[in-house]
Length: 283
Picture 1 (cartoon, helix red, strand yellow):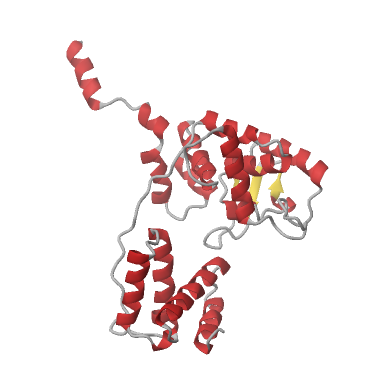
Picture 2 (tube, rainbow, N blue to C red; picture 1 turned 180 degrees about the vertical axis):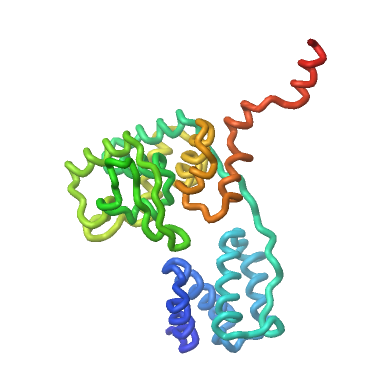
């Protein structure tokens, strides 16, 4: 049963225009805290809240990303909604865990795209890789988002509630036209069992993991790897970093610069200063 405080917090998040997934995660953070302490969250002391955070880190061993969502949700609840000051609610600063994205070679991506014999699934994965989309963006695509003459895809209300355009590859467009003729999608380009519903993100993840397994590719993580590969491969072929930033929908160029430091192909093609120095000595 949702308490009055949690209902009020939910309404507060609505008024703050917090994205649906984030709002659900923040509500779950408060509910989890309340269940653990067996008291309404608004009645808990700072010490009780800190005990719960330690439990999540030490006992549940939550990943950094999960802890960060939990911490942000509780901060929003206590500082934002309940307006507690730092004496009534404080959490220690969280050092950010930085993981380099995992990349696949072009041959590995090609084998994954070829591994699925299902046209719908092949089109889905091709659009993610060919346009650098997040999985949450590809499942929300509609037919009117395709601007075939300009070879562009319009992404509406992506991460951070931002609209943008990104590149649409010629190969993706050919696949999408074949897919349209056979499947005749309704409102959503990639639909669920019911054409009036978008494909669930979990389904898209399963499509990718099955294709990856069938292709015999063991490197990389989930479907988001295709987005990383799009950025890395575009950078390797000489596309300007600021253009890649716009395609990906990054707020800061610092996020896009990650691919400068992590692209294996670019690192392989750089000559070590020691090698240059020894070459000069031989001349």
